[in-house]
Image (tube, rainbow, N blue to C red; front, side, top):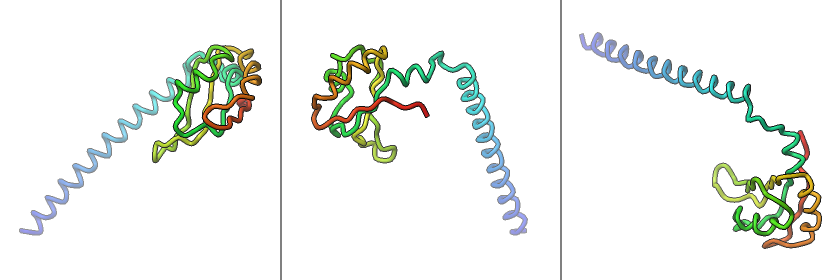
Length: 130
């Protein structure tokens, strides 16, 4: 009799696990559909065009903020976005950033700014399309 009770408890536990797996699979399918729909519709932005207006900035001080970078490079032109790369595990800055400008002329103007320093030596190169 005790074996039957143990077997029934184990069956109930297995059934509960199967329900949870089914729920997780349903959630994964919903996320996949959502991701696919975003990929299909896109955000109306041409990635190559954005890359032409973006630059990679290396050796950025670890304490630098997007606001400080924006203040430093604002003379080059309108800045749409600044992304400071961080380690995905620790959240600490990697010392690199991407700056997206409003137009390609700003990237050309950046050559003048490349001779300046910002909390350390800054190395700048245009983003290359992969």
